[in-house]
Image 1 (cartoon, rainbow, N blue to C red):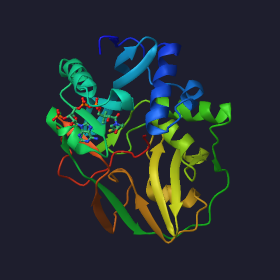
Image 2: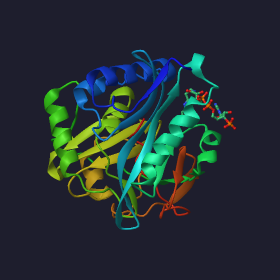
Image 3: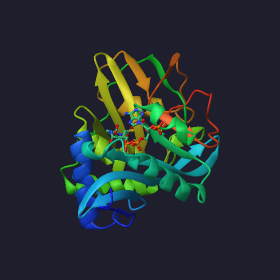
Length: 285
Ligand SMILES: CC(C)(COP(=O)(O)OP(=O)(O)OC[C@H]1O[C@@H](n2cnc3c(N)ncnc32)[C@H](O)[C@@H]1OP(=O)(O)O)[C@@H](O)C(=O)NCCC(=O)NCCS
């Protein structure tokens, strides 16, 4: 352990980002290099233990902008929690979480993360919260012309999306996220089946995928949130059911069903939507 040194200055340098990317690839088999072109989140602060020029353990914080019960809330998210196998069981994760939370405590009341291992985070004061999927029958309409799927391989399409991101409105005033575009873009880049449908008439990008006969609405990036009926008249998708993975209060739509799901979210501090039916966007890694 004597040959390790602590750093928290590397999330904004090319060398630091490349080493963080290597750790994430080795531990999670996720390639974050598309963000070199699509844009890294400049708010990330990484806390890490290094051995010479190799990052062996990391916990990152990033800024989150949430809308919760009508208020815009600044929070911090925890991400990229990883320790290389040969360095596990030595307290490095515990040390980095403490450092990250000490940093967070002076800045925000709410810290949020997503995990498949909640027992890791309970000792640090995190508790699990459940989200809700909203659903109804769906009748496809004859679509109007002019919509197309954006491709993240095309610079013009990325620019169009980033412009909409800079002007986007919250999808819900009750519970939604208006974060930096990086995790959204990474999710879209890494997930086959996700369609980014640009609807010029609505000045919107609607994020969808289909599962058998179900249309799944994942997100809407637009300066004014269109109603679901507006979206229906523009989408060229044949399905008989819709699931909305967003809080639907701005969609002018009444779901017929809803069911609560564990999406891995945990919170620390006051979380005004807790106990209600809501869904922040799942467009994150
Ligand atoms: C999970 C991980 C970050 C833990 O790192 P670590 O440095 O070995 O953890 P520490 O030695 O600091 O252990 C801190 C505590 O967490 C516990 N812990 C470690 N791994 C755990 C796991 N997989 N599940 C539950 N608890 C775990 C330890 O028992 C220890 O508990 P204690 O304080 O009661 O003794 C590391 O195993 C890892 O990188 N795993 C793969 C990636 C991963 O799962 N990341 C989390 C994604 S949300």
